[in-house]
Image 1 (cartoon, rainbow, N blue to C red):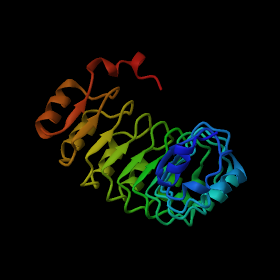
Image 2 (image 1 turned 180 degrees about the vertical axis):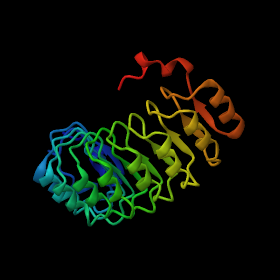
Image 3 (image 1 turned 120 degrees about the horizontal axis):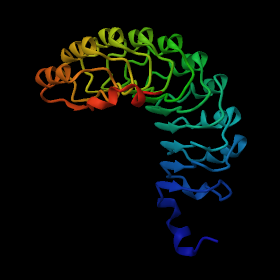
Image 4 (image 1 turned 30 degrees about the horizontal axis):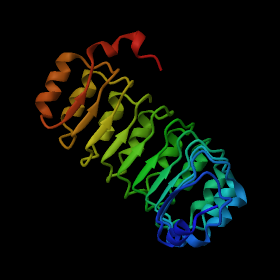
Length: 264
């Protein structure tokens, strides 16, 4: 049972991490951040959140939330950040997020989202950060993200993205951070990404980037951080990159290009 002192302080709580929604949340009307990661919360149990009108950040990763739970989440109109990694949701369930017109950060890592789901994500035009790692969508789905012109950070490592997907990503002109590790993007894809003139951080771990790609990267003068670990870039090309991008921190290991270290 909550002691008297803590109960008196509840109205002033703005950040909370709990193990379940068994407790009454009514006294927490000013709550702005709620973490329910790894809990058993699911479905209509999330209806208890509707009184939290000041809620801005909600984490439901690794919980039992499904599509029915997204109906309740979609009613939290003030959400700015939503984390849904490793949960059992579908493409159709994402349609329930359409009314989150203030959403800036969305995490969908390791969910069963396909190209149809990315069409729903493409409607969330206020997004600034999007995390799509370990997903099964294809380049067709990436084309649906073109309306996200405010997007500044995109993570999509270990996905099916190819050079065709890179062409679509190049349409996201506000991108500053892009992570394409363990994808099929290669030198040709980098040619398209040159259009991202504000890109500051690019991660290409375990991609088929070679000297040709390094020459393309040398022209991307806005870069400040570059990951070329497990790529096919030579030491000579690396030296040329350092000369061309003196302010860029480059992650590289000559031996990481060996076949036994590049397994996906």
